Image (cartoon, rainbow, N blue to C red; front, side, top):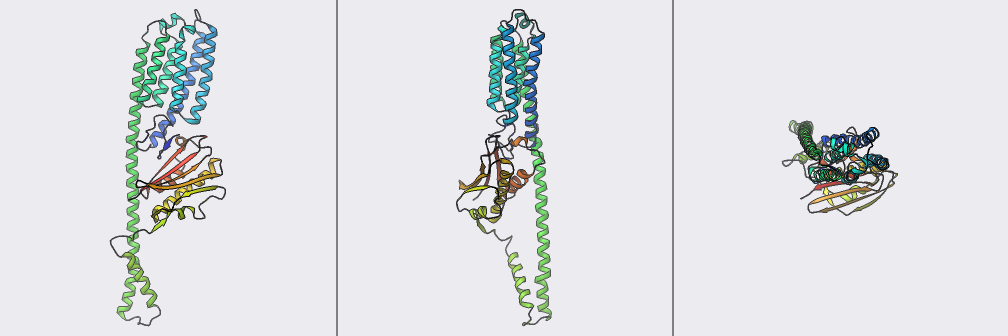
Length: 392
């Protein structure tokens, strides 16, 4: 299944960057466009082949073979469309498309006349081209180029005469590869610019919050500490005053909170207790917990607890199952929490940008404490949400 860091992996199993930088908005947009275009190429290519075969000269070819091949291609186009919509342009699907087209190309002498081959006007050329385009659009060059070579070789082996079409196909392949690489690199640069601006905005918000906290602290010092000292210094209250002791205690608490060079360190929290605390678990969901006692700073525990709660609510609302599992472990300096279900799953690449549940309540919440969130899901294969926080 795909993985996205939000990352909601680009076209699943396709040209997604495994173990690379997180996929951004341009990746998701390009994946959706490629998926639609590949379906149009496959179905449109087969439909055009049927029309061309029907109006073409049938001299010297077997109409029975021709009808059988075209019927098989029609069935494959329907299956290709259904699988692509459900699971995305995965490597197995694209490889299967190449195999089907290659087998059809190898049998050209049975359903295409030698005259059409010599004129280079056969519908097999168009069929081969669509398969090459689908592979280059959906996959990265290390995989897509060998698949294109298979199609070109099958065409050359299948034709009864030498033609210039293999050279044309090679040029087409390289042109599509170059265009797709430019699109992907441009998208990554755009995502980097957007991410930089988002970081700047977050830094501005944090700075504004810090300044607001400083103003509040100064106000507390003025309204409580200085006011108490002024009352004592002016003799307005005596040692036995009923209001002096409570005011002095409040002032002392404020001063202790201000002591040192920064805010007091966050107290440690048992993550197991935070995750299993009542109130966060959806009432209609049975949750199995496998969480050992792990001590984490309070802000981190609260962020993880909130992200887990949102993930469980998503399970209850969308997964179609009533069971989920929450596990946590720390190893090699990383705390990992995973929420898993065996429900219907979904396609992360198809989640609209207007849906904030995962992006804000899980991903951004973990990013605020220096962690990351990953979503791994596929239709019919359940969903796993993995939260990671590096610790010293």
